[in-house]
Length: 137
Length: 382
Ligand SMILES: [Zn+2]
Image (spheres, each protein chain N blue to C red):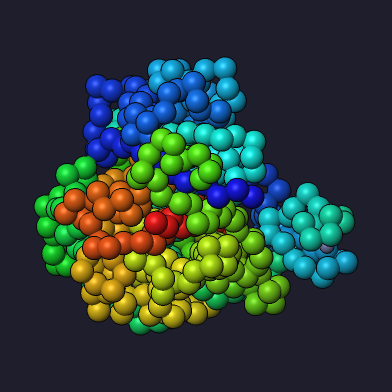
């Protein structure tokens, strides 16, 4: 991986291996968040940084066939992934090389890689989930 | 709160208005609505102008004052409002609140939008939002809901396509609609794919357009017109942003319509005609369920039964909906209310639902955290 590249948004993930998403937890409400909020929206208390689970399953997904934004591959897929260990459903890019393997309930693993460009048109790192079985990249 | 009536409406056709500026589009409908109401501009106590994209496309802002002065409205409070697809109904909700509260006796709402410009591209939320940076654009947000609805309830691609077919059939009866020739289920399914399972004919096209309504305290409306229509309820809610969010349903539809039904003293069984936010075919099916036209998961089958076609039990989008008219974002939800007024006045021409007495306009705007940013439900009654 090209380590000179910046993340698509600062502070969202740690580049691995293993790469991790930076979440947060409110110790009062015991609720987890991604991305990290300024304060807990339920009690306005301070939240603590946590690393989120790197494993999840696909809740729903779709494949965009038309001209993509941010220099993403055409076609590309996005979805909502359930991080069951955290009780969180998060939005994510899905592995552009594994589009035909996507399905509801499919087990997926977090990756970080150089995909597309950022708001300044610079190549950048994005987080994405890839199907777990086979297809090791 | 006082009872509020709509006493005047104005609307342009939805389509290409290349030669007409945004300000002129808005001015035209304001003038039409004021004349329709039988009032003078000086009798209007406040103006509410809705627009979403003028700042992005034309680097123009606070457009409302320019719009309203063309129609002779000055000196009074003027507000410029943006709330995505519900910009127009949000402006309406504020105007209703202003009149209902007693602050104003007469208020005007204009929604206007110009989107038919080269290289507009896919609409997406702001470039500072993480979901947008990770590839969320409007069509794939709706495609994810469509896929989930099909997997959860057995809704079929054919049923999704039938929404576009029905609304296009209705549009054939509406001279103001942009696309009026009939289409078939096969044509919808075989159109170029935008985001599986939504093809180009499953997504509403862009359009320019404007619409206006004049609201008046019911105590005074009879002085001006015999064709007033009562606002039985006007409700705006936002998303809950709880995680995890159920994306096969729109909880906001359910919450907004429950409040509206309660305030109006009505239920879904009392509705005669509905205009809803069919930005994508899947949207209309999920809205059926959210506003209580059928149980959860039954939207596709309700559509297939013909109940929501003109002539059916509860016609939805008799105007042709956004799928046929196009979606001039901030004009859309005001135009829905204009359609409702015309239905209840018996002035909807070939789109008329015979004897319509109760109308609902449902609209929804923008995604956030898998939920929505804004949802409006307005019930009008004769
Ligand atoms: Zn808390």
